[in-house]
Length: 349
Image (cartoon, rainbow, N blue to C red; front, side, top):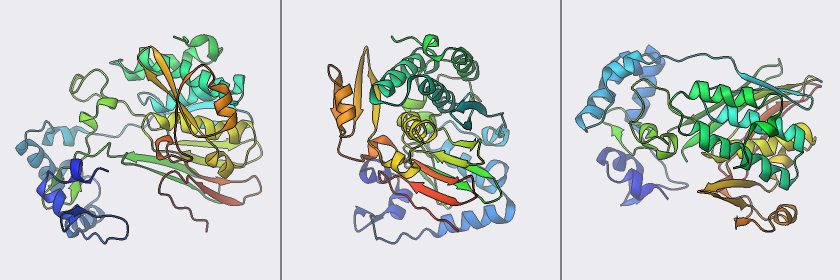
């Protein structure tokens, strides 16, 4: 799908991703010695070489040469920021997800709080998604200060979630738990990819500064140094009986709607986690003043769609994300669950 539009125009990218004029596909072997050397360099020197070492020089020089905005000073100034997680109760579960300025974490937290009041039937899922996503559209997508806007959403949804809200592809998820009681969920994304490879490094650059979905105020509209929006919502949780969960998903703005449905079924309705992942999904898409419900085939969902704009998808469509979860039961047994909608793998050892 993305071979010709994204991976063909840059000669270095094309050389690594094409063979005999066609994009590499399932079963083909890809060899990238430049990327292998880069990973070995990072292994020896540490990740700082990407920000203030030889790799940083190579990235900045190439971006500047090609007319981009990223500079060596930008890379050197970057630091990770540790923030306390959003915490909320969902049934017998204590849930933690990523805080503002992320959009994904606050939106998911608010959806889960509302689900605790409404239940998880399809009509409730549609109502909750519509309310939260309309709020997001009005207050978060155009906010300059995402930290303040996300915090306002969480504070407004604490006591009475329903009253607080007006009615008006290159992402990977890794979820891990262990027998000692540690859980970790990581979501990482290159956006849709820029298709540009830094020569000699094998590094394909992301397009997050040029992705319209993450820049609702317009491209390059925010002051330099501002952390841009993110739909990602890696989540961990502990249950009262000692259960442990790590969960997350790719899927752009369907990340939060996918996770709220799976976690609602698992944490509120006590469904088997794999069954909750496999179950048909819906997503409310905002189109101007209209709400269009994208959905997979399911009699209960279809019954809730009477009188609504709706678009049917095939069963287990890639559109609805790719939830991956690892969990430990209260007795210490380890499990893993993966989404059939996207490429996935699980292991228990």
